[in-house]
Picture 1 (cartoon, helix red, strand yellow):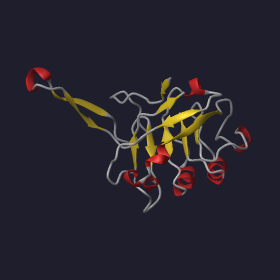
Picture 2 (cartoon, helix red, strand yellow):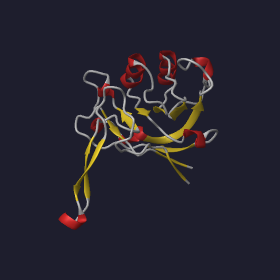
Picture 3 (tube, helix red, strand yellow):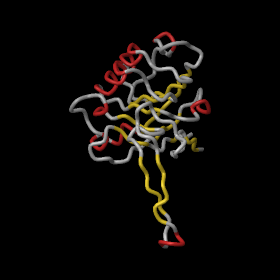
Length: 188
């Protein structure tokens, strides 16, 4: 079974305040041109996307420099929707993170720096959230300095509660990219 974890990309896709809006404009039509194609205008961090270290770390790896293994792996979802404010350490399990992709079902909450430090120390492979942002600049810096990719704007995480699965969220190979939209999926 495949669960789609991606938001649709279109002109109604919400974007982080200040980021470019998503524009999808017809470019070619079968009747006129013999084929159909759209032109896209969007930021690298539009819709469901992944952040590379270069997004916050001067000289950090760009998305095309990241090993593909970072974007695929065994994963699980941590449900922290019932809390308030930033997600704290006492709201998450105390083990089981090494080599795993950890996805947070937050209802819009962000991680605290303490949680980010814990995930790095515990060896998480990647981290993701259903929120528009995983956390503040400090949280991004902690995770991305350790080359832990950050997936944001994930969808349908509630379907995966109490399950382990294979997560796949491959980025586009954008030269010098600070991140990339992804088609994130869970394989059960």
